[in-house]
Length: 463
Image (cartoon, rainbow, N blue to C red):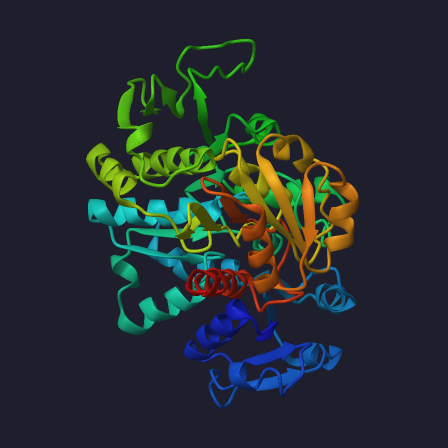
């Protein structure tokens, strides 16, 4: 077996295949010295090639398992397929290995909100007493969780597998067929990898391509790109909406209560079986922000369809504080509140974050561009964003596309950005890091960026 890419997913896949007694080779384009710490986590008899993917490696392999960060649009993979060698992703590998156990998979994709929704579903299922393994794009590779279950002999005891799935992971599925699939939203993202939005949307729709009539697909009624996907799907379709008394408008029929989850009279509600149930008052949902109401609705609907009691759903929504680096409150300094939304890596996520504020926002924006268009931010910044601080490689593009929308400063690094943002703020204002870009120009990943932001804020408080 050949594993391509030694990120978190590739490393976990290699370890899992080795446990299953496969002869494993790994290959990565990175430098061996840079990868030295990663390579220490591999079993000693795993073959390693660094610095590129040599075609010679295909001569004695039965299957290629590709990490999601590796694009399939390379001659190496074309050659593998010409030779009749199957190329699959790490998610597909995990699905195949657990298929004999008959465990239902719950999968969540979308441009924004995946991690929060996935975590909520995990908490709701666990609160009900189900045994759950959770992973994927969330942070823990799902093959790592499968390896743990196979090692300790508990795979047969698992009730649900819950996975956050990125478009990159969906490119390399073959038989992957979740019992429940959700598409939360689709806004422009990763256009440095996809030729256009059509390619990005197609990757997202792979999540339900193998579903049957016995499965469920959950879609965002408020997102026009997502809503229309239901017309082409084989599984049973449910919707969620954060609008009051939403109408489906499907086939010319506009029933007063759509099948799914929605808002009514200040309550989050579910009607999946012909009867409306109230979950919780909007004001009692612990995590704040209009985008988190969407996440709460989607998670509640998934949990309900899995058999979770309304009380367990309500308890989780009233207790869950949110994830680190997702609209995370950091500190308040002389009336100025600081929020860390480092996971906001595209303009669509920035828009959702800004919708949670009325005015007085000092926005820190920038990083490595993913082919994004920042001009849609202009509409949402007007009246909300009091000042803008721009950092990173995308700085010139952002300055050009957002020219004149608000007072703007440039910063050299995160510490400089925090200080300049604070200088523009007054009591009652908010400094929001929601960069709308990837982090790899200045940081290891979005977590590292968020940690540097928080440390910069704390140093500022101690001055």
